[in-house]
Image (tube, rainbow, N blue to C red; front, side, top):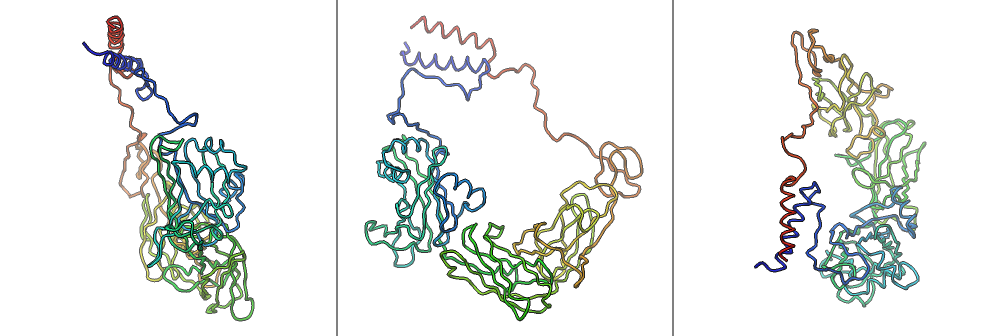
Length: 495
């Protein structure tokens, strides 16, 4: 005779079959064998979802005002609080922690503010938050960063069981990991790992959860971005010339760039904020070199007007030159165009519709300065019939290796206002008509060849759902569901 437990399990299975047969997705079916399961974690919700636990590193400028959630939201929106793997010395480190039930656990504390409540909660059993150096130098021991140091850290309650630890890296308490109560030292440039672990002794989890993130502390560094394949900044004798600067300072930090040269109109000076660029953290002020003769050399210095100076600010050099370029069309199809180009300062070939100011149709990858080379330019838009394609030579004005239509400026012919371009007129088949005027199905989309008719096959490109006769809702059908009901009733009577 089957045991009562076996009969109960059979009934559970048949009920599940019945529910699936009725059209309820299997993923939503939940049944109990009648054995109560209760958590000993109290009223705080416990989650087995791995995504409910996380730690992330962020960075903000030194002395950033991040004492509440509104300021943190505003800093994120403005780009002054960003995800990072690099933190400059004295900048603000922000650790974002998330764990299911975290807000409820900390809210139950009696301390006077969020920072004190969070620190006290960390002292509970089964909770660990450690920021430890991973790559000490020779004869050095690992450092331990006390990110709950009340003199250097502010804890901010976020949303959805999230907390932010805002850490002043200039004043934070740092000790030898092997003597955590010993003499304090400064946070040194090195690599660190932040680890957040909860064990089953904690009220938040029933099994161990551990998450971590890594970051590197680097010196406060800045220098001129001289561009690919060059050791000097190259500018034209023209207005709006960029002098790009790269730095380790956090996005939103202020830097000042001074350009000095012989006589007037030097010096130039500009102060602005660092932003995240495609090639690192940059600031690219523009200056008017219109009255500076080609061949003039100049120097560039970078400084930080904040509380902490830039320790490793290198002196940059530049020269005013006349950039030269040439472009020439080779071939074109509906997908791309082949162009031969020579760009003295490197840059891109850009294809536009109708004129040098027309709609942007595509651009090449970065081309190195110097020798003539042939490049394919992908065309991003469908091409109309009978149009002119204009290839434009464009400089990489901000020296980041990525084309930016708002920043990168065209090459000019000598000292004139004429751009370096080459035009090509092309004819493409019209919709519903072939090259020789015969009606076809669809659009040809390829250059017209005399005497050639091209047909294309049109379609949605979206496969239809297969239709299988006799298949309705998932499961075994109505008959199987009826049998399941009868068996359940029979077992109930046998019991």
